[in-house]
Length: 574
Image 1 (cartoon, rainbow, N blue to C red):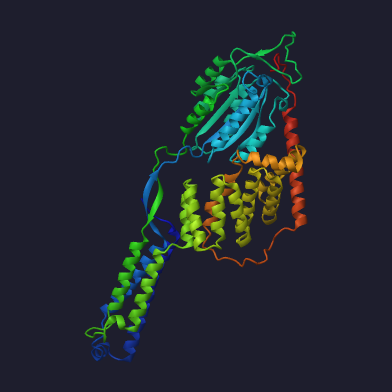
Image 2 (cartoon, helix red, strand yellow):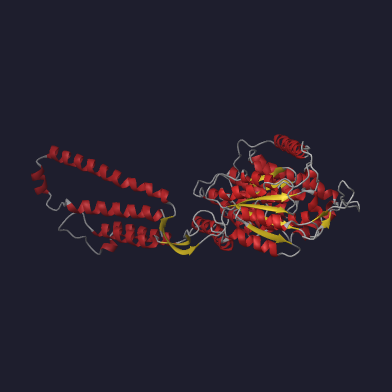
């Protein structure tokens, strides 16, 4: 596969016909002046060595060389390595049963906690995917709209319990129906509905909804959790849930119903027990979902072809130098010793050598291509080579931080972001650098530094909604962390948590890697230049406080809506 890395430069080829038109007008003006001087035939006899052909040849040789130089600047490339990206862009809606029956402990530590652990592990396997979260019991609610914000998905999981929904029971059909309407409108993206339940469907209609989901192109996976033999529902005070007759409720996994729902949707039923087999099988099933064309060939590595073009340019320039404008007259002495010839040849040789040398910008582009094909370790090498060529290149430092963060080397990534924000003159890129730095600190559970990083991000870009959200989230987590042991406990927790890092919002921050570096040819501003339009510290604090208040109000409204009792009278409250 042939391509141009920077095809925008090809627009410069329009200069060739423009210069040709200018030359035509110049020749007409020259002939007009000759006619004023005298008869053109007599003038030609007075200058017998003047050639009409050789200047034309020299002109078009120069035009050909100019055209090839433009092609060389556009960086022609030939595809070499072929790969296929798997499981790219899946959208997954997880419908989690939070009815009281999910408190049963026949699966350790409980059905609900086991389900939450499964969802968290599933998120860890996601890369370019999106996830949404629905909780249901007697009613169903969207807990997290579909997003690539994996850290939020994990945070929402921590607060899920049966008390979120006042109307108890199990309405699987309602959950599937809500999930069907929670996806984006992208028809090329694989869509999966994962229902995690113990199968005690008290409302009915689940099979019909699963069938509709399948007809709409959505894959339905039913994860049945629990023991078919049944288990009591603990109330947390040593007692067990009892029915209206005073008998202890024994809730059992209804495997038959789960299989029927999966079959109606032409999906897969997976039994969840205390082993990890269910997670492995689910990941295997999700791997079958693809985005776009399944057999699409992707060239993941390209060879530069400008070297051959540079050689042709050199030959054209040498030919132009060797051709004299006059005929029947040779240059005195060897042509290499002629001053003009020597200068042109030296310039051509220097240009050819410069074309073969990789600059820091070339290495950054190379790293970007590797990064976009998920070859983060190789991208890291390219960015480090760029920094070796130019240690002060802020874009290389920023991109290196993104690559390290993808490799889950958050501490190393933070160091690169710190260097990048010091030297990067572009305010938008600096803002994104502070944001990614905050995500890295948040992954390390160092909420104090994460909050400061998000503040700096918002001072540069007050409209950064993800930074505002993460700031509020980190404030809440910081408060909980201090309540659980203060600074000493915090340090101890950081050390343990480093062994099991979350993905956080790396993708949201790092997806800017490609877009930010398309501008790496822009003129760099003075590092000490005063940035205009920056927020004052007081204004930033007011904005952040408003974001916290807004978040608290939204959470309160959502919780109130979810806890609003239904008008239906249910015989079973589990």
